[in-house]
Amino acid sequence: MAAHIYQTPKNAMQSGKARTSTWVLEFDPAEPKRPDPLTGWAGSGDTRQQLRLTFPSLDAAKAYAEREGVSYHVTLPAPKALKLQAYADNFR
Image 1 (cartoon, helix red, strand yellow):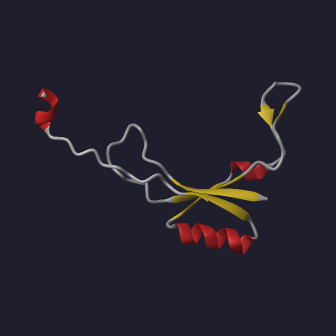
Image 2: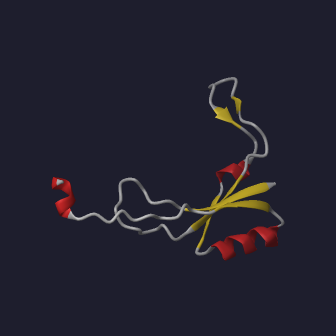
């Protein structure tokens, strides 16, 4: 059983940084999805795929995974680069 820990990215529709400081732990799929013979919908018997746990910090997410015996891998967020631009730059 493995998990993926990452920080929530900023939504493309928002300009602020609200709700971007939380960390998410999602479990990796334990078995592949297969089509249901009656409806054709994809599904599996692995219910851990439906869990999405949020934590206030990376250390809290790591502590939970270690306490529960879950192997995990962390994806750190990309460094944020600010593009400082003046209004006058639009007319050059």
